[in-house]
Length: 304
Image 1 (cartoon, rainbow, N blue to C red):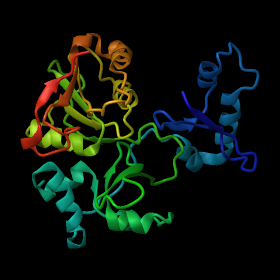
Image 2: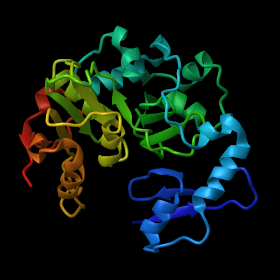
Image 3: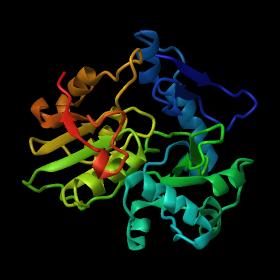
Image 4: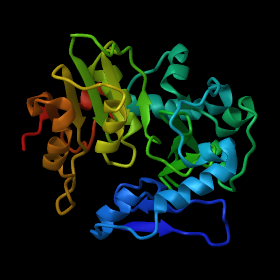
C-alpha cells in the first residue's frame, strides 16, 4: 500500500488527512486505520481525538467539507448548442443518441460554467476554462465531485476529478446512475459496476435496454470496485437476492490484473453466496471495455 499522510501545522483548522495512491481514496485519518497501517496495538496519541476537536471547533459548514455523507441538492443544466460537439462525442462512443429528457437523470454535465452558474457557485480553479471547453462531466453519487473526460484527447489529463465543494473525503466521488430500487423486494437486484462512466452508460442502454428497475449502475471511476459497492451495502442492499455484475477492462500483456479473487472474498459478507458475483469482459476483438456501440460488444464471463 502506498499512502500519504498530511499534517499541516500552519493550518490548525485542518484535520489529519490521508490519501491512498493505489485506489486514490482520501479522507480523514483514524486510529483504526493507523493501527492497520503500522501494526501497532496501541496508539499513544489519539488521532480521532485530535480530529474530533478540530472538526467541533470548525463549525457545521466546515465539518461537511471533511466528510460528506449526504446527497447535496444541485441543479443540472441542459444541453445547449455550444456543447453539441460534446454530445456528439458521447453519443459516438455509445453508438446511439440519448433522449435529452434523460440527460439530467444521467447527471451528465455538458458545461462546467453552466453548472456553476445555475448553482450560484464561483469558478475557483485555473483549469475551469479548459474543463468547460474540452471536457464532458459526470456528476458523482453525492453530487460533490465531477469526473471530467477530455473529448479532444489532446490535453494533459484524459480524466480530471473536479472537487466542487473542496470536500476532503472522496470515498463517494464515483459516478452512478440512479435506479428504481426496492430495498425489501424478494426480486433479484443486480448491481452493475464497471471502471468508467461510458461503460455503465453502454451497459444500461446497449445491453440492458435502459432497464433501471431493481438495477443499479456504478462506475468505479478510479478502477477500484470494493469502495463503491460498500457504499450501497451500508445502505442495506445485502442478501441472497443481490447479484454483483462486474464488467472488467481487458488488460494488456504485462499489465497487472485487478485482484478479483480478493474482491469476491471481501464481498462474501454482503452477497452471502459468491455464486451471485459474476465477472464479465468484452470479447470483441481489439476492444478493451464495454464503453462502445452494441455492435462491438461480445459479453463473455471471466472465470477465476
